[in-house]
Amino acid sequence: MSAAENLTTKLSEPDKVDAYVSKLDHRLKEVVQALRELILTTDAEIGEEVKWNAPAFFYSGEMRPFNPKEYKRYLVVFNLFKKDCVRLVFPSGAKVNDTSGLLEGTYADGRRLAHFHSLEDVNSKKEAMQHVIKEWLRLLDK
Image 1 (tube, rainbow, N blue to C red):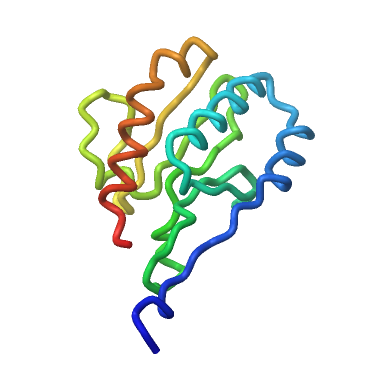
Image 2 (cartoon, rainbow, N blue to C red):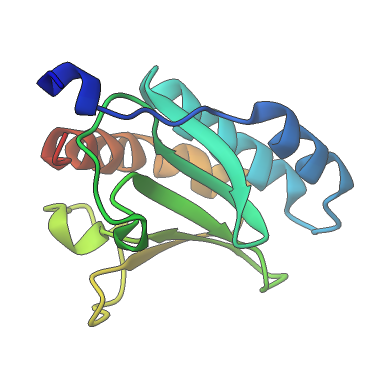
């Protein structure tokens, strides 16, 4: 088996995320939609699905096989439990050198969070978000 045959990809499921967002009852639904668009337009190899009962975004390109429990593909997952903000969980956020202050928290498992309270918040943090996403994709063990 050649090295190319060992590589795996993951399919995006935008229809499932569309259905999830259309039924979403959250006061910041427009923030969710804006963040989704921002994430997806940052790089053509970002896919989406509903995982952990929320939209989740991942690297959809070729990668060597790995233990699925490592969640190496996952970039960011929405956390919509709070009604006053939209939290984005970056499972491997600690790997990214974020000097903007976008990513918050120091969790033992390496995740970091970003909080958004309004569309203005999304717009003001757009460059920092795109930098973090691109840096994570650059560091990804493909």
